[in-house]
Length: 576
Image 1: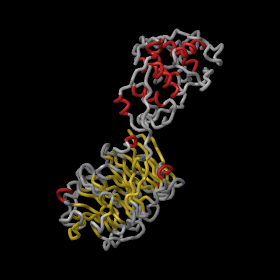
Image 2 (image 1 turned 135 degrees about the horizontal axis):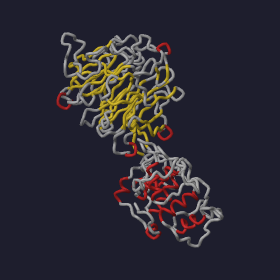
Image 3 (image 1 turned 180 degrees about the horizontal axis):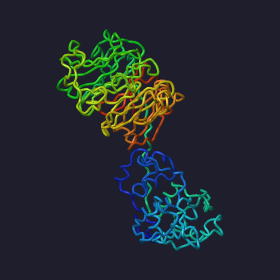
Image 4 (image 1 turned 120 degrees about the horizontal axis):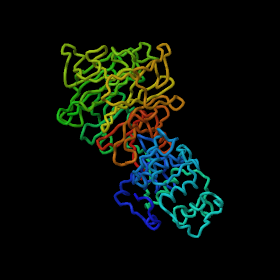
């Protein structure tokens, strides 16, 4: 960045951005809200120089190009651009005390770029006032020392303006081209400066080369396999290129090289119940599957109760050993719905098991807020141990760091207050747990929390989503964890949780969590950074309706898959 009062000759010179900087720009660039903006190249240039940090911290994936620039913000822009560090040790103005931009305003005053906003006293800076284009001309003329008026009187609408001389000097230096192309006989001195316009003013003054990013990714959904029988889930063992697809009726099928293999990896169709929300619901491969061959399935048995059963692979890697079954845990279900049923291993090697509140409607047995029951909870168990050797239905150990160990509550529980956590996932890069918890009649929710936060209460049924549900419980929010995202049933009726995208085919979508609504077939996404949700997006207009989405999946190449009840296995991919 330039020093104060750089000459017009130097200012007009081109400072080339390196090829590396250009190559580092992701598709769509640094910000998602300036794509296609005429000023995008200069916005990227000032971002590369650290002059802007975005407008929506902590995400900072937006620039807010059409927002007006306040005098306080302008001070920060210019201080970063000019590397101003001297504040003169003086509190120049009385109306900026405690303002976030006070330090920058003092540096600007010390450099002689601002004279205040209330002459002749000039005791105020007016930090919240918006900057006009005429004022911007005066600021830049003082900042860069422009003295040449060139031919003078460049524009017809600034005659008599107090800023006319500054505007002419700005035009002579090539910093402004006017405001009404192609004529450009107007400057619009009384119009407010927008953030995108500010980027171009500063970019030209500094002689930056515009940085044009590749176009943003427009994903598409490609059907990989069709003809599956109500697929509910898919996953892969670590380091394995095959995708194992769970069918509701009790079959696990293998998809290899995008081709559905004949036969079944495992057939437990005679063991499972097939009521509305029942069936074969989950599959998880042991973290050491490549050496021990163990995997786990979750299903509702013929009595409608939830079970996790361990199996091993046979000598044929495409066929399980059907005779190797060993029950890990059984949970009685009072009703046929809200079974949850998904299982996965966390990064500590323990198995998570999502269970609904037991079913019916409105949690009549009040399981959601009962930490002593396994229902309405996220369980966490150690399948490599056995703390209950005399109980054939409990072949697991309790992790010592489970939150209710030694306290009131079920030792197996990791979190409570869930209605039906149908699909959940852990982002390996952040260790954040994302839970798509299906709502009752009004609200759907996605909960997000660090795996290090044990013992959370997600609020069902005093709350549905982030809204009061059971007024009889008083709807006291104390001690509850509310969803990161909640949407009403006017927009959908049953959330299907998904995954954070970590692939390398669509770099501008990395870090975005994708999920769906079962009823609307919508593909949705958001980013979650430091507890803040941003970049919410409905992709359905681009990709089309997906049908009744039952689940998502991720393979070992971090590609994202989508399954629907019609029997399709689809994959999210970049548009060629």
